[in-house]
Length: 305
Image (cartoon, rainbow, N blue to C red; front, side, top):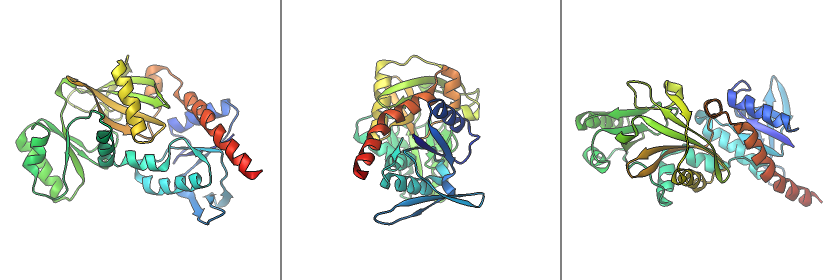
């Protein structure tokens, strides 16, 4: 099978692991920087081209793995849609990726499916600071910038006064943000569930560093393997399916009233969770692609006949 990995660099751990796993299973793999792709949009020949080191080539894959960075979501999704129009199987679809990257939309879709989350409020410019704070039960509370990733742009307001100042500052800047209930009983920890298809393949508990409330490994948090409870597995898989994804990282927090979903990541990193759990996630992803891409290949073959 010809497999394309849409990634900005071959040297990223997750990309390297996926290439290694695919080649071990006999696939032909090419890493493509999505920003160097361009497309020819026509009714009967929707081609995708790639220009690298002054050489132009037409891209033809049986399946693609989108590892699209958050900063290039718009263009990366457009290129991915072109592959989809051409009948190429994508591990995660373009629509599902854009849903998950829009934190507000993702929260709304999860809420529609009755998936438990921390209480969340949102406003753009209305004079509603006091209401936003009241909706989430008052301080301490979290203010989360919609464009932030890896724990960046997530701030803790410990008092109502601090929350008012923070919210008003963001409103004055016309920044998009969410105000969210702070789950104190979690003690600065959360659980990353790595979902592949219909099951949680691996999970780790992340703990914040001293003096911080964010558990992300990129900002100094630590991690260890964790045994999930049945309801935690169920909510993680349901969250992924609610956004239309096939493979994703789901961050949940243990609260006094059950597991709450914090976020669904459509392009989760492999390094931390593979090293912590010892599980070969990269190979599991390739096996999943093999299972679902084969039907797409059969359909394309029948159409040519």
